[in-house]
Amino acid sequence: MAGSAFQFESPGIGKLLRQGRLEVPPNQRSYAWREPHVRNLLQDLNEAVTGGGIEEYFLGTIVLIHRSGEPPSIVDGQQRLATTTILLSRIRDHLLSISRNAVAAFVEETFLSNIDLKTEQRVPRLKLNLEDNEFFASNILPTLLPSTRPKTRVAKPEAFLGRPSNRRLARTSDMAHTFIADITKNLPPDAQAELLIRWVEFIETNVNVLVVTVPDDVSAFRMFETLNDRGLKASQADILKNYFLSRVSNSRLAEAQIMWNTISNTVYALELDKDSDDDGDTDRASDRLVTYIRHLWVTTHGPTKERELAAQIRLDVNNEVRTFQYLSDGSEGVQDYAALWSANHPKWLQYKPTTRKHIETMAEFLKVRQIRPLMFAVARHFDPNEVDKAFKLFVSWSVRFLIFGGRGGMLDTQYSIRAKEVGTGQITTARELREAMKTYVPSDREFETAFASARVSRVYLARYYLRALENTAKQLSQPEYVANDSVADITLEHIMPLTAGDDWDVDDDLAEATQKFLGNMVLLRASQNRELGNMSFDEKKSVYKRSGYELTRQVAEYEKWTQDEIKSRQTLLAGLAVKTWSLDLS
Image (cartoon, rainbow, N blue to C red; front, side, top):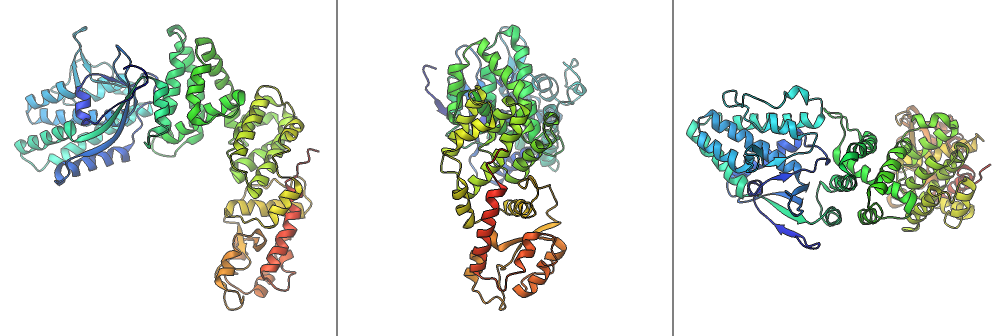
């Protein structure tokens, strides 16, 4: 293929398998489909084959990189290709079990394996990655029937089943075997063969895929920006990985692989999904892996959009030395990145207790993402005292921007610029960082004015704001930090209820308009809040008086509760907010 031209075709997936060998790059991610994915495919195909009236079934997009003289590499679509190959293997097995050997041989020769003319050995048409291929070739593709299974096997399955992806391959094979047995169990042998031949023909010509062939990794990466495919983020991570590993010599490939695994395993651990494998959701984890690579890049190169990342990396990381520099930097920094998700990370043991409190506030209460590259740069490059001061600033900045607004794309850009300045040593203290952001962070006056009229839609933010303001009202140190608690114990109470009864003398529109104003909210213990419901204000006041929260008790001092009182109270809270989320570094 010349230049950067893309080629498109839409064959049946069976025709794609029979065209020749297809390979998953050795270092690409492993087989990831779980039972729901496999079950849905089998059920959909069964409905299409036996339901009548469905001429075609679209299985999605498959992206291949075809370099001159090499078999096509699968960038995206290995899950579908591997699962379809497993299904055809189990169809072949069932045909052998009912003595339809000629048809079984056709399935084997056409879709599963053929003879390599150079080696004169039978080789699979589909080759998986380093982690999966030996298990796939020796324990999944060969017939499962004892009478026809080759006497010599490459390896026992027990040697592989410690790997989650190998377990998933084995589970998919078992599901396909059970499924084929189930759809044929009430049929005589000839009818079973007829049904399975229909399945094979349908897979070959009617299970369509859109095959996109591209010339190189970066072209594939760019193309994913325009494809709405479930494999998007995972494929981007795979492309980046393959690019890095392609830049190193064979003698240092294992070293580079170790560095990449350090990065990916640490990032994947941040997205554990409590399922039967306990090995995480692959797409979410790969999404975060691409984000980490971009954030690492930002700390040395400044603002970079994800769609620009692959091209920029290719320009800069263009030889073995630069590749090892980047992978080394990434593997050294990944624990600093992981530490941003947990105040209990071992990294913070050497820091002030207040640092851990700031981390908890950012991760558990504010849940902001735009500032993460800057947090990462500071965590890596500032000394512990400056980290503590900077993270306190980050809490205040984040609240101020949440209330005042982020001013369009300015925030992403400025945080990325500051991340580069920290990452390259231009900024080394929290005071310098504050000065560099002074123009962009809302001033005390801007913040107070915005807070006085702000609406808060997210309940978790309203709870955090009120608890932090409560600390300021009680003149506690570090008021912006609030200890984690159970939502079941401390609840958010709307003083003027959404559905106001006759005692309130307000229309529904006004009651609805007050619901997002912080001035109309108080904190109560759950046991107290259950008493209130839509009680009148006078009845609620008696409960507020008994509250342990200073700001809640203050509401009981009001004679009435209308929109004017709500505005007045929110103005008072705004004055406390400036003190709570201060820009002072002392």
